Amino acid sequence: MIKFEKVYKRYDDKAVVSDFTLDIKEGEFFVLIGPSGSGKTTTLKMINQLIDLSEGYIRIQGKPISDFDLQELRWNIGYVLQQIALFPNMTVEENILIVPEMKKWTKEDMENRVVELLESVNMDPDKYRHRHISELSGGEQQRIGVIRALTADPDIILMDEPFSALDPITRNNLQKDVLKLQQKLKKTVVFVTHDMQEAISLGDRICLMNNGKIEQVGTADEILKNPANDFVRQFLQTGLPHYQEKKIVQHLIEENYYSTEDIVTTGIISASDPVNDLIILLSKQDAVHVETSNKHAKIIITKNNLLDFLASEAASSKEVEA
Image 1 (tube, rainbow, N blue to C red):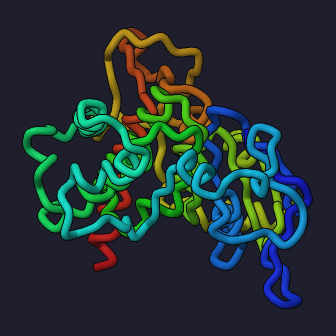
Image 2 (image 1 turned 180 degrees about the horizontal axis):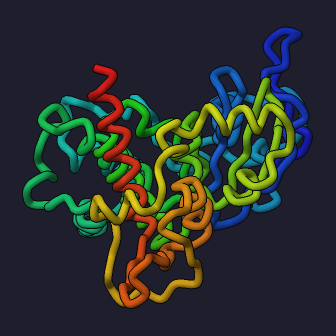
């Protein structure tokens, strides 16, 4: 779908992205992660030519991006920013319909698309479509930013730290919304974050960058179990919250972050195992069975249960710091 071939980006003589080579698969949720200055946002912006590459090739479906008409390229790539970049003097509907109006959609098609997209993120169209952006909360504004990127049905969605300015609970809810949308619509998503926990929760695969270079690419399970080098090990140690080192799966059960529904699972974990082991398992599947001392109890922990627990822990941690 998206292929990088020995891509470099230089400013004067300094390379901020070097020898970047990888393939992003069609329909994949691909995460770029790394410390500040690692080149992840520059890499993202080269895909839609917001930043021009200095050397190498980026291809979409085999075609070099330089061969696309720029407007055509960007219409086929949705873009979601941390700063949201909505027009505050316009209504929700007007913001959503910017690209369809430029593409001269019919009025009926545009109205149907607004309803469809608002409903997809649980926002009542009758309640929200005529509101001005300034009347919405930060989480609501970011939801509009996400669905606006989907309005013209692009094949690719670029997301540059879209949730980092939000509180943990809102952030967690938006992560779940985006995952549901991506699984439903099968879009190719390239997502930038500096948060390892977010990368593990969202990514089909993760690319860990440092100083403009790729340190490791793989699933969360592959990276957590087999870090490629000392940098990756150190990043994992600092990137995952320290409270997880002391938390075990039993804590989720005690705080009611589990399900007793009849869900088919292939993974099994013990109630005494660390939460980090649970994160690894749920990076590959949607639910796991928990073995407890009560052999007759059926305890299931889903990926959403885990995300809710982590969001609650993060919120509690922030309150203690404050």
